Image (cartoon, rainbow, N blue to C red):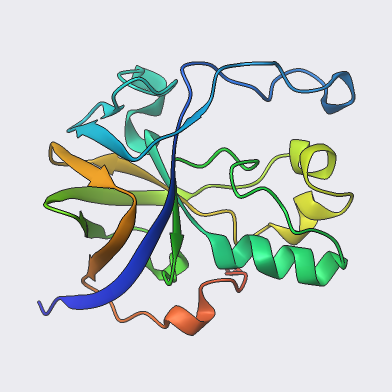
Length: 187
């Protein structure tokens, strides 16, 4: 199988030891510590050290989330709003230049600096109703199909902010990074 390489930019690495969006959106988000860090340590099968999903059995297949900032920019354009805080959706790794939808069901490697991590992309990271509260009315619907992907780390490694390379077993189109992926409904 051939490997395709795509240059990406890791813009943000979000780590938070607690959930901020629970309960009713009208009650407001919890005030929890959240860090946009320069680098994160990833542990195979567990996630990002220090993050709320690290080592949680219910989240092993979704311990690391990837998100294309172009999706957020597209939502801002669609809603004639923004610019939005790229940390508001609370995805761990915010990238520029990565079409993520076609990666579902595949193993990918993200190389940054002198580190790399291999991830199994398991499923889309569907948005929640909180997006209407923390971004803008209509953001929840507008983010459907472009909320990023949830992954399980297969290797230990370090990810850093800055230039990187995404290795993919499938061809991607970076120009589609912000576009919604609509999954066909099964009959």
